[in-house]
Length: 362
Image 1 (tube, one colour):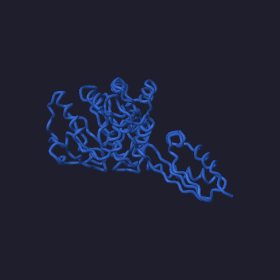
Image 2 (cartoon, helix red, strand yellow; image 1 turned 90 degrees about the horizontal axis):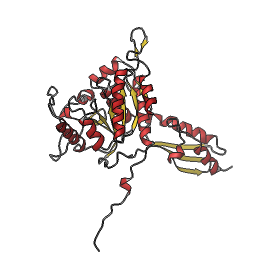
Image 3 (cartoon, rainbow, N blue to C red; image 1 turned 135 degrees about the vertical axis):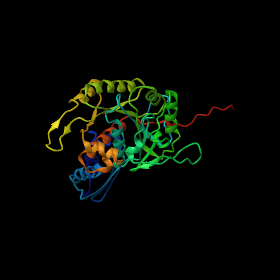
Image 4 (cartoon, helix red, strand yellow; image 1 turned 45 degrees about the horizontal axis):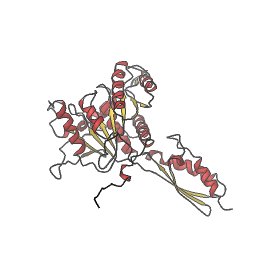
């Protein structure tokens, strides 16, 4: 008995991506279906990095095909395909950078930099090419967090190559100045330095560039929001009411300049005593969820107040690199997938598809 191709197509069309809740076929994720004898081969293409999910997706598709009459064997290939997505109107994409994710908070001390670095590492762990830019000109922390020392090399005297740590391409003003040297600069100098770091770094074919923003809504934040092609922003906050006040200001700033909010990360949500196991909400509970409901955005994930996260970041081996199979690293990877899925579901950038128009006198 031969395989009915229509039954194969129907079985594949009914499959839903467990990470997005949408059919694979809806996003042209089912490709190269072939039926030969009693064998079926198919390729499932995800629009977000999810290397840790490939086996589960493969097993899901194989099980669905095995239920089709006549199918004895199946070959299922799963891969990710990450493309560029739209940014603010009138701002062009950076060369070799598909998507820029700004990680921001309205307030300092909420763990934004730690979250940004671990988000970048989690995206890389899921199979993406990732860079991270330290946009905090006055208080750069990226060199210490990634355990990187040295200065960027310049191949031409005008641009600079990013440094690398734990598989990430990275740049920071901290690589260019001494660690204890304060940046006593006015706003225009700081914003100019940020633009140089961003545009004069030779980023190499990045799927995502994660930008660790400084706290607040001042010159640097506005420069990034108005002149840098940002695909979306992630807001980091603690559940504490006073932190939420400032986080809401950061969220509204991005909304005003047309940058989508990808979601909220609630940091330091709960502390579990390492001695007795007692769980306590030191900074309050449910603040991130209330903010998300108020502004119609998603809570990407909640992270604990854990001494190991601080110790690992201070030692130059952030959690996702130091303990990749641990519970907290798993939370960061889940957050990274949600960020990438939010981006994948937005409109693609099509500017490169349009031909240039030249007007000539004939």
